[in-house]
Image 1: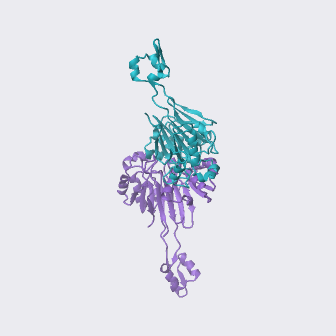
Image 2: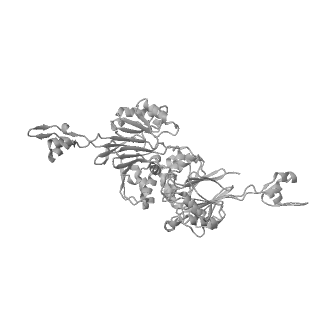
Image 3: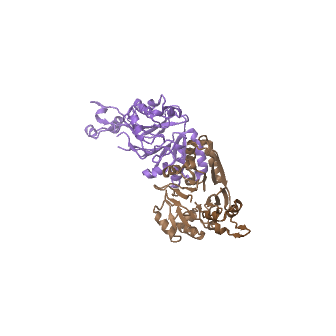
Length: 305
Length: 305
């Protein structure tokens, strides 16, 4: 089984604290490496955690708040200096366009690779990345400023033909093609059911990233059945008023969402600097959704194991 | 004696390495706190090292290269969020003006305090900060792009009158004023020499910051007699060609400068990511100027002790 792994680089909210950097995560899906948000210090965290920043396939930015993007300039400069040639796609809200454009006008000389900026403007989930085995959907969040969540999901694989069945039935190439598409093999002497000779090589895995946002009605539907849900839980339940005023989510709300969406597991972070005891966040979430982990910088989650 | 203390926040050169952040230093001079350069991760380092970022009096930026300035946006955002009200002076090359202006146009809403940008354009040392007991001079460096060094020096103090002399001679207020200005006291019955009744409360201390730069003829003169000299030494002596091509300094050149300028001590940093063994930098420098220290993140230097 190939990797489908989430690594947390930064789990602080807007205010940095000693052992928590600002928001950034790396998702590895097989041979692909995606960076999701890029708070200040992201490149340093990648160095410390041994994540090859030169191999990033794309960058997804949820919104333009500094604690989610101020690490981008340094990261682009560094991989430029190190000689990256491959084009880099950056998916971000449309209002990040001028920021990137200004940065490139001042610092672009040191960046020898092409940057393709993909402005996000959708009002409902849309596929923004469509690979052979993986697709990424972006969807709007509810943060009082243009903000987007991302759903990374593997595509349903073709059927594989069991080796012993090939030996037993001596399938032709045409028959093998039919089996891979999920069809039965029809021969003059009878039908060989697909289920008897084929299997799915893997169950598609999925990960969703929701930060920053207040809860909103469509959210559970848009991340339904996800294996691992990352959701901000900036506030403990007692600060629900502040969470609402600042378009953020409480522990209990994040956990209720994971439960309602039928998520496999929940990781929460983006904790307010007011409370340094992450176990309190975890405890409150687990009262509603037991499969919750309060993330910390450097945590690695294997998805779909 | 009040503090005159340098703290290194970041000692890497352009490429970040695990235990070295990008360029930033904090200089405390008595009750004042100055930030010199502001590479990515500066605010996190201030949090980790217990330096009160809300109390910064001014920020000095040597040049616009990202590894010296990309931490500024996050720092300004954070102290804005924490409610700083006091105006903040930022001294930087004139070409940083548009960067700051763009940043404020996009992110200024969260910054409730006034920012006074002081563009540096001088061709020779000029006083840019003139306090009661301290002045700061800026002077051009030689880095192939507008770059400035900074000299922080205490002013010559007034003379203090010895307590026992006051008791002995019963000085009038007018006489005390004269003594403080360094004058002798002239009485009908004779002259009381200043040196007999007065002393200087402290010897003025000084610190100079030179990064990034290749050596240049006026440099030793401009930092002459400084107590502590911070100078970049990006390259070991064997890479003198690269140092020259990239407008940087080698170990031996930095040490020769400290010697020629009659500096008290030398701190070198901004080491190339190529060589992780800082003791090699230190060793090479010490062969020319024994009072050299290869800086590392978190180092604190008391100046003028």
